[in-house]
Image (cartoon, rainbow, N blue to C red; front, side, top):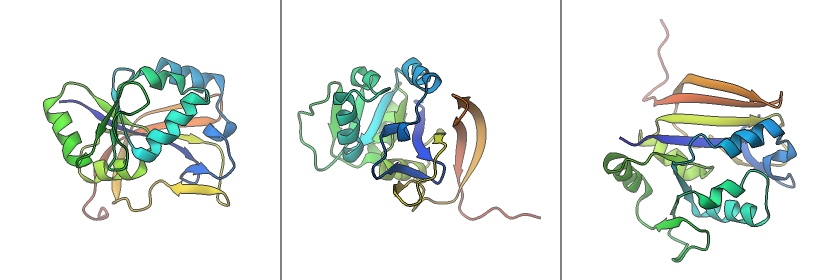
Amino acid sequence: MAELVVDFITSLDGYASAEGWPGWWGLQGPEYLAWLDENPERDYAILMGANTYRLMYAFTKDREPGTDVLTGMTKVVFSSTLTEPLEWKNSTLVAGDAVESVRKMRQDGDRSMRTIGSLALSRSLLTAGLVDRFRVVIFPVITGATGRERIYDGYPDVALDMVDSRTFDGRIQLVEYVPKVLDAPPITP
């Protein structure tokens, strides 16, 4: 069965972006960019919604560091607002239910998948129990005044078992977990 990884880039206080700040909050360093270039899941299909598709495509056109590798990758875009043909190479549009489409892709396909951003899509896939790994790259900045798109609002309670961690450039932290959606908070004896 194909694997599904949810992949987030966040400020320390859990925002996906911040008004007026550049991509990566301007804090990307050579180690982090090298890791992006190595792209450990290079053969995974990238899942995204329309907003992330527009944002990431614009980043590649603006030559934002670390985004050039995305053009050659397979991208599946879930949207009811975009229309075919999509401009960005190697992109396929899916207008149907994202959860059911991904469930079928996992069951019938042999290609693993990962998200990039796509907060609502990632939340729905996690809630449906389809996520195998949950990876977060935390940038050392708090954007309380300018932060936009709080990542975890609307999420169910989730237990996370850490399977990997890494520090890039002495300041950027990657943490990777296996998630388990909880029906209720755990009871402690």
